[in-house]
Image (cartoon, rainbow, N blue to C red; front, top):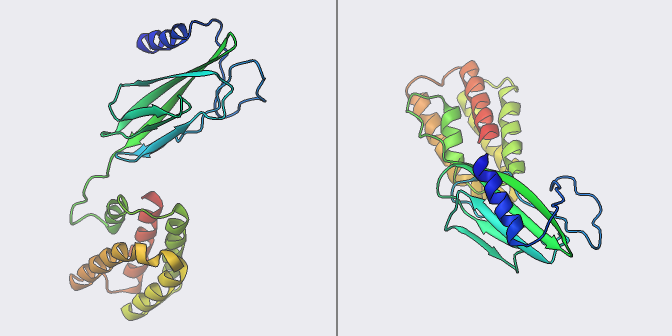
Length: 226
């Protein structure tokens, strides 16, 4: 906390201004013409290697100052201080300190970004939920399509299907329908699921309707977690 206070104070003093007016990026009031005020658009979570964009261009300010704790060579400010980009090489918490000045006033905001790393590679004996989460890590798909696919696996699990071929047919048919234009992007992931299901069936772990329903729900759970 002492380190943070010193850094924040250093930002303010570097602008040679006094009396900071604190605000939060979530609920900024109407901007005043003569008062400095920050309006910051930024995500609160990101993945390792993901390009994070921070945008303060709608702020009321004549000058900007940014600090990142801990420091990183992968942090760059541009557009005359109004915007910044960052990419983390390791998981953890990264604190952005933004200060702006305008006509004798100053505003300071801190923003915490939590960066998560890839999930651990599942063991072969882990259930399919862990495998689904792992396979999803590098898949660039929309959250909407993840939810839609999860809902579809849950729907099929509740259909009361019998023979394994019925499960495979309905899953293949409806996945194409649900994913529509995104099906091509999802195809490598679905092929991994298919290979895992085939392996489970060969080893006798996927034979009854009850076992199919359990596994289909596990797939849906992984899709929502991933």
